[in-house]
Every structure is written in C-alpha cells, then in structure tokens.
Length: 344
Image (cartoon, rainbow, N blue to C red; front, side, top):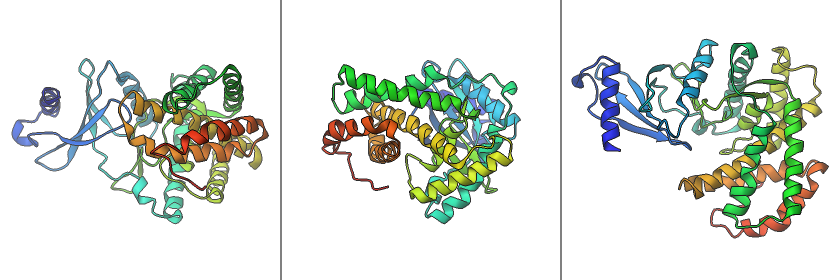
C-alpha cells in the first residue's frame, strides 16, 4: 500500500502540474467506505486541497463512476468534479467537498426537517433528468431479486446460521416478487441508490453535495426518498417520516414527476420500496462482516431489522414473513453480540 500511495501522490502532482514543494509531501487519509475505494486528501501549499482516490480497477467500476459523475454534473447536480483519472491504476483526482457530512448535523427533528427539505430539492432535480439523456442500467426485476437474495444467503444462513427449508425459500421468493412488481409499477427516474445522511455533504455555501453515486440506475422514484427518511444510520418518529413523505409527494407532483397519486398509494409505494431496500441491506451488512471483514456495520443491523418488521407488519401480504421472522430468526438475533432493542 505504501508503494501505491507514493505513486498516487506523484500522479496527483503531475496532474496538477505541481512540484513537490507546492503540496504536502504525503496524502492524508480521509476515509474508506463499504467498497474497496480509499480516499485521501492532498493539501496544497497555496491553499485548498484536492481528494485523491485509489479505486482498484479489478474491484471497482470506475467507468460507471465517471459516467454518472458526468451525467449529474451536466444536469446541475452538486457532485465532486472529476479532475483526472488514470484508468489502468484506478487513480482518480476529485474536487474536495470538505469533511462535513450531513449525518452529525441532524441533531433534532427541526434540523433534519431543514436539511431534508433541501435534500428533496436535490433529489427532485436529479430525478428530473430525462431518460433520453443517459444510458443508466434499469433497476429491473432481475436486479431487484438479486439484491434481495443477499438476505437469505448472507444474513439468514451466513450470519445467523439458520438453514432455510423449501417452504421458507418459496415464502421469501413470493414476497420478493410482490416487492419487485410494486417497485416496477411506480414512476421511474434516476436513482442515486445510496441517498442518505452519510452520502450527503454540507458544503461551504450550505448547499448539499452528493457522493457515492456510481451505482446509479433508472428506477423507482421512491427508492432514494425512503433511503433518506428511513436512513439505516439514524431514525425519526413514524409520524415525522410520514410527514416528510407527504411533503416530498406534493413537491414531486408539482414538479411533474408524479401523477395524481393518492397519499395512501404513495405511502404504500414508499413502504414496499423501503422493505426491498432494508431486506437487501441486512444481507449487505452481513456480507461486509463475513466476506470483507468490515464489522462496523453489524451495529446498524438492529435499526434495519426494526424498519423491516415495523413496515412489513402493517401489510397482510407479509403476515407470514413477520410470523416466520419472529418465530425463527428473532430467538437467534437476540443472542447476537450486536443486538439491541430498537423501538420505532
């Protein structure tokens, strides 16, 4: 890794046409994320800084990142400018958005309301990008099912050690098909696919900037909304969440992105889309621990479980799933070292 960092540092200087005396003599670690990308800051002697990224090309789709970055930037979204890219080595040079993530600023519901309304405007502008303007992959049935399949593979069997029988697999597949069908029947638009408080940054001008957008697709309009209001890392009261969903619905209808859909139908769209996401996330967080050695996400599982059960329990279509989860999985879950009781 030291050799890679040295090469990355030299490459950054070359791209910026700087000598070694014009910038710091080493890269400062900023963060990693759930992927294999690693981020570093390069302070410049004249002031300011840039972000250097090492995204191994055998593990990360840097072309997708570049393509989505260009699409969003051309349509006015606030995303980091891509300053340079060495495709073979997986080196990228980006604009520095600073360190202020949205998440720690959400100290109460009033602060969240201020920023979430701004986030809705950011989201609507992205969703307004016409389908003819891009070639993003579709969030189709196969992709939705592949994501949900992470739940039985990595969470149920991998993390909890519970072996599913044929009836249980059929029950889950039936549920996954219902969720997939509902998602595909919704209004569609550009989907960031990880739109939440750790991927939104508050910039110096108080605007919100988006990061981690490389997995964007064309898909259900409610996906990013529910990712934000039922964030896997911070929670709000159901009443507050429902209020935000209503606010977004009105904004989206005024923007022409939604037809004249009733509050009840839209809420069900959001709920079922959230179920798809949270079932997937249970699998992803388990996989990050088991496969990638990233165990920090285990502490976020209880909130995602609470979201899953609280929403699923409101719909008779998922009565069998909830009964199975309570009967078979909860007795195992409560014995896990990461478990804590979450009351939504």
